[in-house]
Image 1 (cartoon, rainbow, N blue to C red):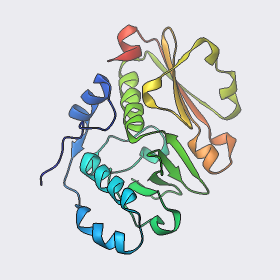
Image 2: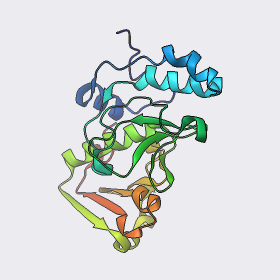
Image 3: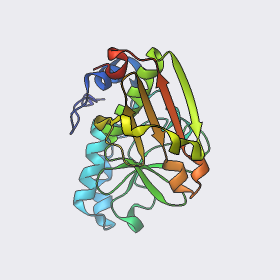
Length: 217
């Protein structure tokens, strides 16, 4: 199958994310979606939306990413799917199947956001690249941190984020990363917002990091 390189992304990726893709991810075959273009157009789906789906599949389709720490591991395989309410909702399409049976679906939003859909749609990152950067950073931090702590619910409000700076490359929305002098903090609020359940907020603190551990490219 003639596939574009995954790193031929519409947005820049850090060296860390490119390394993660090339060494930790596998890209398998996946269905071509170009053959459905005429059918989708006949069904009233705008051409601009069809183009977004085709481009996503060309760039990312078939990529198998190691499980993320949250959201039941994230999508099993990145793959565009128009079957989940595409006609009714407009600019959304599926980003890939779940690894396990879960109450959320992984979606790409009308502005390119990567997020989850359950009781409501919640964008986690402003782009699919942001999701990849987040999973890559979690993998990197877990390899170099001297200690990893998990904090849940209201206890997250006590984290000293005023002394940290946001990690901008993950393009965070509901989920954010923060970089301090010797630690990284990841905060996941997607499921809490999706199900209106603040107790589902999760933070992970990766402590004891040196300069390389804090960045990794």
